Image 1 (cartoon, rainbow, N blue to C red):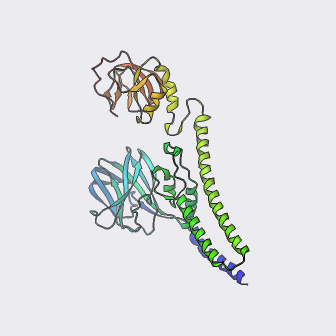
Image 2: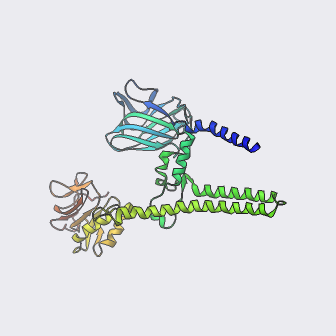
Image 3: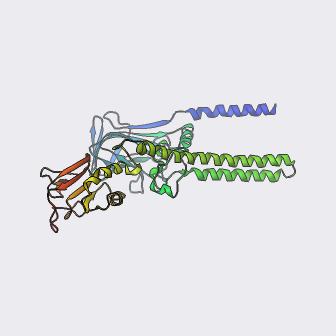
Length: 400
C-alpha cells in the first residue's frame, strides 16, 4: 500500500509539471510599421528616425542609439530582428543597467546582410545579459542606414530548453586545424540560436558537457561511497550490489561520451567523403579550403614555365603557403613590377578594366593583358602582354 501511494504521488507531481513543460514559448514583438508601433522609442547620438509605411528608417553619421523603456514581461533568451539594408552592416542589440544612457551598456552583435532579412541572435552569448532591463534597443555604427521592421524577443519553456540542451550535446564541431591536437567535446546550452553557432566562438562560450558528466559522475561516486560506509554492518551481498551499480554508472557515462565523440569523428569522415572524395572534379570542396585545390589544379598548367608569379587570394593565409607547395618550382608573391602572370583566387574586387588592365576598386594595378583562363567569376589567371619594366610599378599596388 505504501508503494502504491508513492507511485500516485509521482504521477500527481508529473501531472502538475506537464502543463508548465508543454507551455508554448512566449514572444514579445516590437513593431515599427506605421500605425503599429507599440513602444515609445527615442534616438540618442547622431541618428535620425524617419517613419516609413513598413518601418522606421534609421540613418547615422556617428554612433547612434534607438532605445525604449517598455517592460518586456518575459525573460527572453533569444531575439530576432527584421530589417532591410542597402549594404552589409554590423549593428548591436544593447541594454543598459538603468535609465541613464551614460552608464555602462552591454550588447550582442548582429551581422546584417544587404537586402531584406530576418536575423536571429542570442542574448545568452553575452554573460552580462540581465533579464528585466527596462532600457534596451539597437546601436548603429557611424554611416549606417537601414529600415527597421520588427524586433522579437523570445522566452523558451523548460521542456524546449531541455530538448535544446540534449541537441546541443549532439551538435558536432567541424574538422579544423586545431582538431589534430585537441577537440572541444560536447557543449551544452538551452538557447536554440546559440546552439547553431556553438563552435563559432573560440573557446566556446557554452558549458562543457565533459565537465558536467565528470561532475555528475564524481557526485554519484561520493554518494555511493557514503552509502557504502552506512551499509558497513549490512550483508556482503548488498555491498556487492552497491559496488556493481557504481561500476555500471561509470560505464554508462563512459559509453555515452565515447559514442558522442566517436560519432563526431565519423561525421568528419562522412563530410569529407561527400564534399571532396566522391565529389566530381571541379566541385570538390575541402573543409575550410573550399574549392581551392581544384583551383590550383586549374591554375598550375599556366605556371609551369614561370619562376614566379603574382598571387592574390581572399586571405593570404593559408592559401599562400599551399600555393608555394603545389605550384613549385613557380613561386607565388606580389612582385607586380616584375612578373607578368597574375593568379587571382576568390577576389571579386579585382577584375579586368576597359583598357585590359587589372583594376581594384576602380584603380589600375597591372599592365594591359588578357585572361588566360577563368575558374569562376572571381578566380582566374591573367597575363600581361609584356613584362613590366623593373622599377616602374603600376599606378598603385594591390594592398588588400
